[in-house]
Length: 135
Length: 65
Image 1 (cartoon, helix red, strand yellow):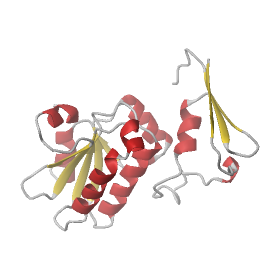
Image 2 (tube, each protein chain N blue to C red):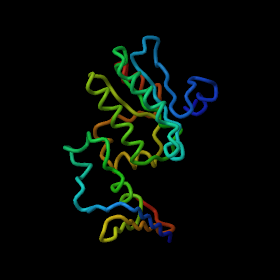
Image 3 (cartoon, each protein chain N blue to C red):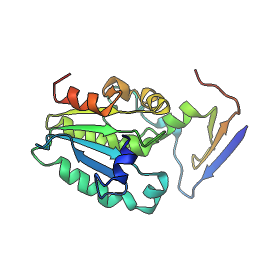
């Protein structure tokens, strides 16, 4: 199931950023951006972004998986957004990883050399298991 | 071939003065990757002297390996 499909069945009320607990404890969050450039331009994302930052600052949140399955490509704004999440989690200290990255997305991460510091997993399940120390 | 010219009313900047975002010292900086991505995915990126106008060129049938 892709992040966009999950949005359709109401995993989150957010329109632009889906947030889901990977387990009952809330220790690992899966964050799936759905937004487009237009959403950024119109400021739709700002309120959801603030809510996400607040959620990440909660003590129980230790790990974050960014699920990029809904984004065939992205630009420097999404990279900026992911770096901010990474730093927030790293400082806890927690674990951070990406999953379901498109071939173009991998090229973008490689160009920015972020693939040298971020783990990229093929699926959401593999990412969750790895961050939970089960892989 | 496609050519895109983007200009703003700002004072401009010197693209050569920007820090390398891939340098390990800068990898944790949140911003500063836009020019890198333009240079990665376009065939040509040219700034005017003032630095407030960029011309992006993309050739058709360009296959990146």
